[in-house]
Image (cartoon, rainbow, N blue to C red; front, side, top):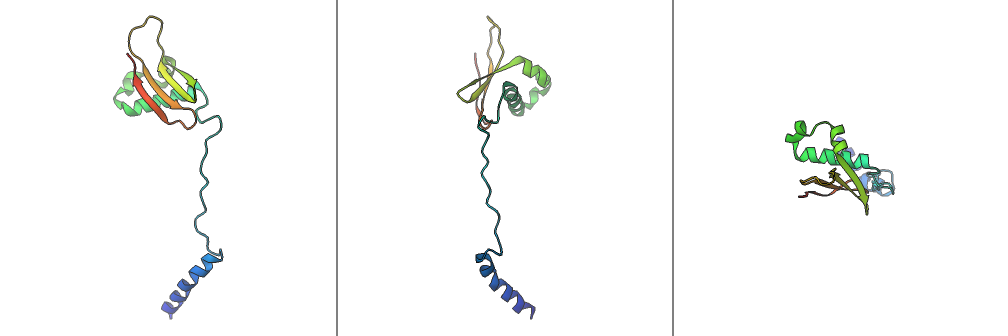
Length: 116
């Protein structure tokens, strides 16, 4: 008797689904970033660059210093929808800079390089 009820219930599933009585998962709306992008200012760009650099080089956590020290030693400029976060250098200083490129629209990392 139980088997017959199970078979009967299974036979009704396609009919219930076709009439909308049983709905599948709701369609997911695709996320779109805000028009201004998710990286809206220099502070956000520098914070993202800091997190990326430390995730690539965890051995530097104790050597770089605090996040505030990192922020004071970096500058960010926006050009064509990409934040260029680079080490601040004074006039006449010798040495290379760290440069991390962060997309303003969705915060993906466009590139990372060291200059000479």
